[in-house]
Image (cartoon, rainbow, N blue to C red; front, side):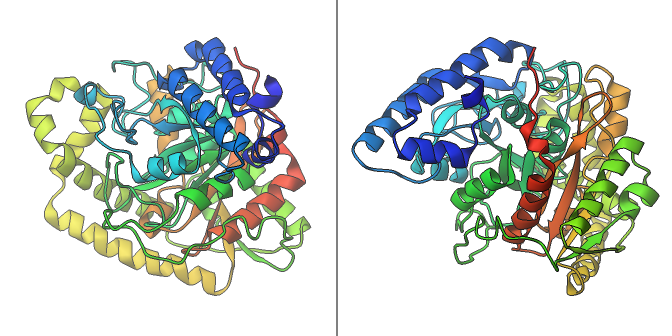
Length: 464
């Protein structure tokens, strides 16, 4: 069972296609694992074993008939509970939406279901993808599988915890200021925020329309690329969606990185803010490893982290308040305290401040993208600290702000968080790799080369 719990998507696909692994057996093993362990991790808000078994039986019947839908056929997955699955509640982990039944599938849900995925359930999130971790909501927050007393990152918290815990090999999350990459870093897995508009957000409850991204969390780089192949694509119903030719994001995986130009944005974690010593050392060692693999590495600089962070905060707060304004007037008591406080900050932002932030955004984005005239990818921190205790609100507030993910929501650039080792307390460490728009395949190439050279993804948590 432990072998099936940590079976990768690529390996599972090969076994299922050759009829060496039954989708029903696979789903049953993961259902049993969730039932045995999730009461202590709270990764799922709504666990759906009956749907999973029906999906798995359908997938198995098709395989027996010689019909294979592709690499997600018969593979279990979960959805952050801001992503619609027709007929089930989409609650956003909030009392506000506890009775909200999705009328249709989200775009990404449609894509995964059409690819033969096996739906395991809706996953925990911070309330409306912003407030958390909170203990004053209808459901408890997800916990870190490496140590349940610690924070698992957010806001795609259940997506990170479930994937790291071996409950699912893939999960869908969202990212407005780092909410895919934060749990990826905290849980020791891979999370991709692709280029803005590459993955449709239709059917995903918005936080801030100009910053929101949807993307996959997986345990390995290759698995992540496989999922992005399925969920990327133009959607005319999402005004932010871009029309681009189909691409194979796995196409460069396995190629070496000799001669690639890597720029290290070290001032984000060693100057603008000073990272925890173990996190900073892990990132520096990762940069050295890329050089050992043949990349040409040098330090580069861009806009200070503080300017990116302020710009992201203003835009996010203003756009989120516009979405929640009516509920904040009519049902303020139904929000958790942290969420209510964060959304009300948007009421204090003037039109001039919002417009000035968007102007600054355009300037910083152009400056950042000029880096790619001289480098192929940049490497920097994701989180600046390992996971703190989940029951320490001051520590959570402190560490949540100490990150360098928000710059790439501002720029819309593809950014991927991958594991970079472990702290002395056994908690995951991570780094972030960023490329020019629409260069996701290059990110996967670099990430896979680093992953293969280090072996961090071979370690898994011992569940309580």
